[in-house]
Image 1 (cartoon, helix red, strand yellow):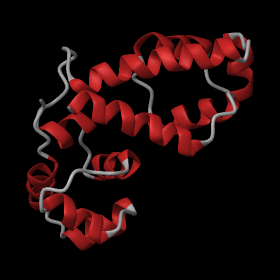
Image 2 (cartoon, rainbow, N blue to C red; image 1 turned 90 degrees about the horizontal axis):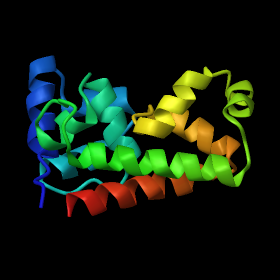
Image 3 (spheres, rainbow, N blue to C red; image 1 turned 180 degrees about the vertical axis):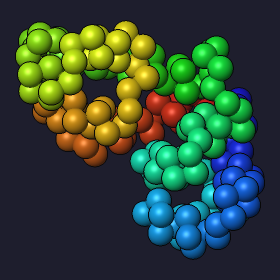
Length: 154
C-alpha cells in the first residue's frame, strides 16, 4: 500500500510559501475544516480539492500526496492517468466522435486530444470539458477520479 503524505506535505509547503492554513483555504477555495482534517491525517474525499491545493502550492498532485516529484516512472498517479486515458478513448468511441469533431467542439488541437487519450496526463479542467462533450456529468468524473485514486492507493 502506498503511504499518503498529504498532511505533512501540505504543512511543509505552506511553511515554505509563508502562508497560513486559512490563507491556503481562501486561495484554493477549499474549506479550512477540510485542510485541518488533512493535516490531522484524514484522507481526502474530494480529489478536486486536492488538485486545487496542489495548484495553489505550485506542486504536482504526486508531490502533494506522496512527497515525491513526478519522474515519469510508474506510480499510483501514473496508473490513474493510464486508466483515464482508456476511459477517454472509450467515451469518445461510444459517442462516435472523431478527433476532428472533438477538436472543433473544444477548440483544442487534435494532436493534444490524441496525446491525452494515449497518456492520460490531461489537466483536470480539460478533462471535465471533454467529458461534458461526451455527456458525462462532472459528478461522475469526480467519482471516477476518486475511485481510481483510492484503488491505486489501496
